[in-house]
Image (cartoon, rainbow, N blue to C red; front, side):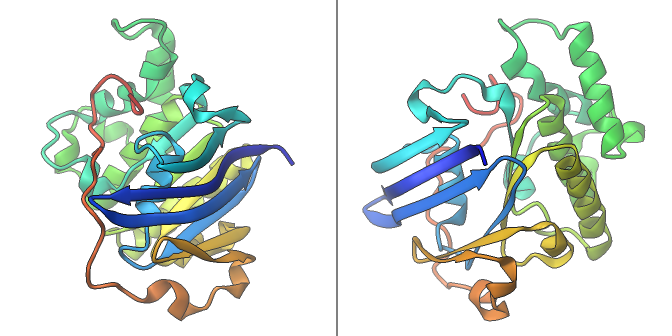
Length: 255
C-alpha cells in the first residue's frame, strides 16, 4: 500500500514539557486510522505536527512520500480542526469558510473563479448545508459547524482528511450523520486520520487504532484490541498551550 502520511520517531517539547516522545504513525492510501488517547496525551499536537502546523524537534514527517519541508501539494490535504477552537469569534459565513478551502488550489490570491464556486456549492450540498450557505458559522449548531469545516476540506478535493475530534460536543444524531458522511468519503477513496476520545458511531469505519499515552504510542493495531479504559480515561492537567492556533479565513489552511 502507498503511504500517504508517515511520522517517524517524532519528539516535541512545548514550554519545556515533552509532549511527543519518539512517536511513529503511518496512514496508508484508503485507510481510516483512529488516534486515541486521554486529554493531554498529545493527540492534537501530533496531528498538527504531521501537517506542518507545529515543527517537531526531532524525527521525520512525510506527506505522500515527500518530506514535509519540501511538500507543496497542500490541496491534497484536508484538515478539520476542533470546531470549538476553529469557530470561536469567527464572523464568516458558511460560504466564506468553505471557500477558504480552495485557497491552496489558486496560483495567486484573488477573487474565486467559476471552478471554485462550483466546488464550494458541491461541498456544501454534500454535507447538507445548502440552506445555511449565507448563515454566519457561529449561528450554527455544533454538528452543523463541524459539517461546514468538513465541507471546507472537501472543497479542496483532498486525498487525505485529518480530523481532530470531529464529534466532540456533537449530539449522537449528528455523530451518526458525520459517520455516514465520512463513510461516503472513504468509499470514494479518501484516506482519513481521525482523532477522538471515543469512537461511537465512527467505530465501524476504523480499520486501525493508535493510542497515545503521555506522548508515547501505547497501542497500534486493530480497533477491536482497544479497550474502553484505554481511551476513555481523562488526565487532569489538560493539553499544553497551542503555539499555532488555527485561523479561518487566512492565507490558506496550512500557512
